[in-house]
Length: 191
Image (spheres, one colour):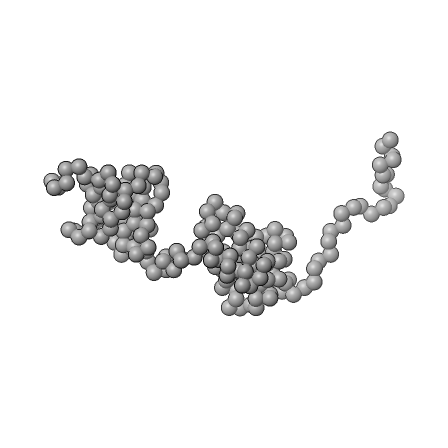
């Protein structure tokens, strides 16, 4: 590697992955997404990580010593990822409340059951897209039915809507006790 004017800096040739992040010291830093898979140079000091493409600096981040974490600049993301980044759990729940309380409960549960709420965003956004095909009332009833059966998934809501189960009456509750007949001995038999 050619000699650099920064004596205390660490230099490294890097190649960003498809997720437009490069790894340095077990931390991941973003670069502009168009540079994924291209050969870049990284310069790191105690406080800063810079990424160069040719002689042009394309990214600069404060250095992080958090292992296996990501530092991402929104400007580096593709447009589709930026739009996704605008969604927060609070925003999704607020939208769901506009449909109804059962829909809000469902999306909260979808996010709560994931290690990270963001992992449930796709399912929650799928519930949002159901508004294109179904009324808010039907979505709300389907979410209520899914919640009653503790089926907190997008797929459950879709199945309920596709099969018209949201438009049917409530199923009869399961019988909790056995009916009385001659083969049932009862508690007195054992005393």
